[in-house]
Length: 165
Image (tube, helix red, strand yellow):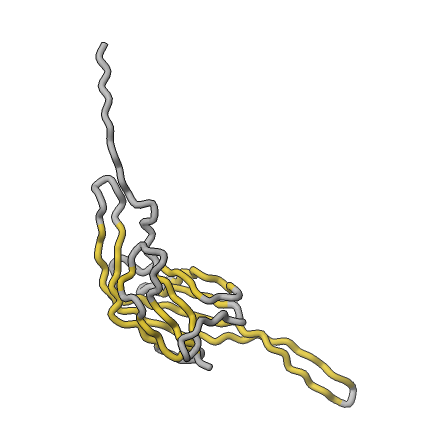
């Protein structure tokens, strides 16, 4: 009886997830932690919306995937703001809490580059960001592209969103 053994070395990356890192900053470029819950959603051309961050408090950054094939992605950021109105009348003081939202839409123009490490490994897509602009400016002042190359490197900080003062 003859036995045969074969050895295969599959050297696939453990971190193949490609995410765009977004840092929130004030108008001077200093890191900011949002005081209000943030929701971040990707809006696809067919109208579908996928929430990646849902009502998260104390946000200073987030990671979001970019589409594999589209040349432009749309992201919707929404702040849920709770405030209180105090009314004093002859009969006393009444406090009423109410919640409203501010939202801004961001468009990211990019390229998509498939990346293959080996035929044994799953492909992933890297991206090059050409532009990132807010369609509205309810709480976003402007966007800075810090590192245009979106890869699976978790240390990269791709976009800085500057929040209005």
